Image 1 (cartoon, rainbow, N blue to C red):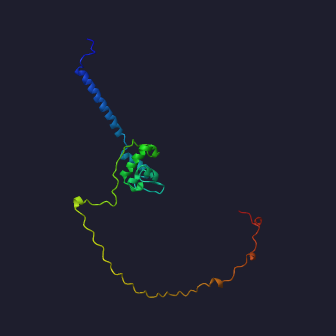
Image 2: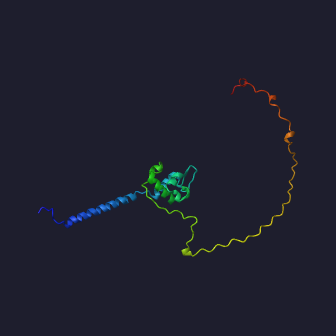
Image 3: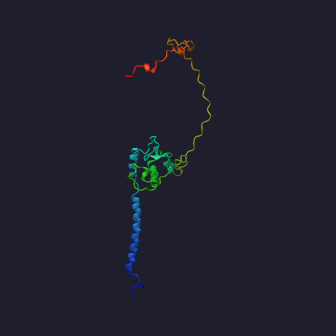
Length: 205
């Protein structure tokens, strides 16, 4: 027999299974390696220390805000407005989420001096703050909120205070200056002596 039509042995099947398993596990390792190279909170803290002294709420008035010093346009164009109108008003976690988007689109060059230690970007989802008009309490847990008290009835306006007694100022016995029309007139301009010629002045020391 030439072996071309021979039934596959169990050892051939085992080798194929092992190769497929290795390929699947190997690609999983690559995916995990990509996650291992993601920028960590510690790396972002290092960038913030370099950019803003580690102050995530800083606004120095130079056009850059927050811990990693976002410009207003970068903050807005990378979705920062969903968290706060300006970076210094957002939490550290929200600023890092936006910084990850900047890192993904611009790379480490977005922080040319301070970004050299950053790993790769990792998308982060931080919940946006609750709307201001949303209920602050959970009625399902705490029951319905108590009704608001009715507004007070219109009260009569308060009585006007009695007029104040006239105030008598003490005299300091100082005469007031004469009115402006009682002063003598200014001398005419041609009555002033002419200025000496420049070459007649003594030399400077």
